[in-house]
Amino acid sequence: MFNYLFLHPATITLIAHATVVSGLVLRVIMRRLPTGVALAWIFLIATTPLAGAGAYLLIGERRIGHRRAQGFETLRVDYRKIADEAIRKGLTDVDWQRHSAAERGMDQLGRAMVGFPTVHGSSHQLISDTPEILEAIARDVDAAEKSVLMEFYIWQAGGQADVVLEAVIRAARRGVYCCLLIDSLGARPWWRTGQPRRLREAGVKLLPALPVGLLRTFVGRTDLRLHRKIVVIDGKVAWTGSMNLVDPRFFKQGSDFGLWVDAMVRVEGAAVVPLAAVMIGDWMLESGEPLLELIRAAKLHLVEPNGPADMQVIPSGPGESGDAQLQMVLAIINSAEHEVILTTPYLVPDESLLRALRGAAARGVKVQLVVPEKVDSLLTRYASRSYFDDLLESGIEVYWYRHGLLHTKSITADGRRSMFGTVNLDMRSFWLNYEVALYVYDADFSASLRELQLRYVAEADRIVPEEWAQRSLLSRFFENSFRLASPLL
Image 1 (cartoon, rainbow, N blue to C red):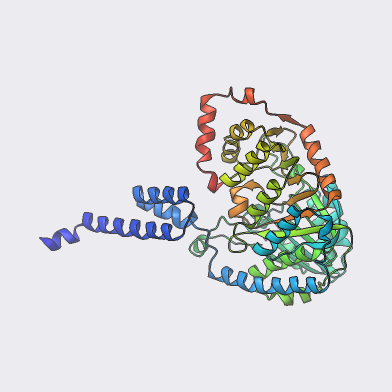
Image 2: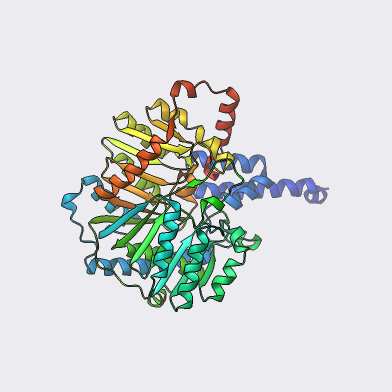
């Protein structure tokens, strides 16, 4: 009788249930997740063990796989060598006497968390016209003599994007070392076209970043994406910013949010070095080629300072930098004494970011936030709106940009320091994507960026708190419901 009960399917199911729940609950506890997140996972696993366990194993942890984790360990050593050489060559000889204590603190924060110091001597050109950006990148590629390095989240065939493609093919055919790293999921439609084959036939080294597939799901999370946008030409010129390698006239034109609105910065001088290091580091992680061999193959070298700007490059992502990007964003917001202007396409802040914005407004800082009225994710659109009440009640000016999908990611503080790059103000950017941002301690760059931000403000409609409070109960319900999924957006 005892054996019968013990071997009964219901008994076996109960034991399996208890084993799975106990094991995963113990794992959640030992991972030291934020209390609310941990309790939510424990509740889900206990009440729906099959679905809850599957969901946790898929997206509950930022798993990157053993091989990638080892790659980051090697990369940290190589980055340290590059940083030491930059220090020896004087690229980090910043005159901190002309900077505020807040900027010195941000430099120290970036050094401690990522290992990338501020470098002195860079010039910059901020461009917000997409055709002009693509034409200028193509000109730089056509002028390349040694190497062309690129990484993008999305590459889309059509329009001016094809001008860049043809320039890369020409460069490879005349013997320039060309490396392209394009995200496998973000650019999935492009990978199915004939353009990747044309690039490879011309001699371009081309790899998909973070390939996805059923087997890879057991190694690491497949929703961790390479969201960076970097171009480096001959180790002398670099581009970064929010724009993917797309012509907005040919990109997602079946949607109702209009053309994508982006900006990029063209950099010369010292900041090219860390931007190149980030790109070739990503290539090393995907290809397995040693970083120093890649540097030799691309004929990279430390450049001479060229320009007055002091810039700090901060890469971030799972296994690479913890919460460094979030900490830097919090630091720049908390440094403001008079004004903070922020633009982002995706606003899904965590509690720390939300409190920093509200705290800035409460201490008398003028805070202006510009977001597009419509974005390409319905869930994010409604989740984002759920935060407007908190922001508006704090006196923050929130603007809806209605002339396209505003995709520029930027922050200026007091017109003195700036953040510009690929980082959205959402938890996906801070925790799940591989991002890169420039923290620029230069009044001229901040003035140019602030002028662009104020142009966005002028083209946007300010949300009136009294009118926003009149929206329907159903809208509030949808917004707050989607807000529960914020960590996954």
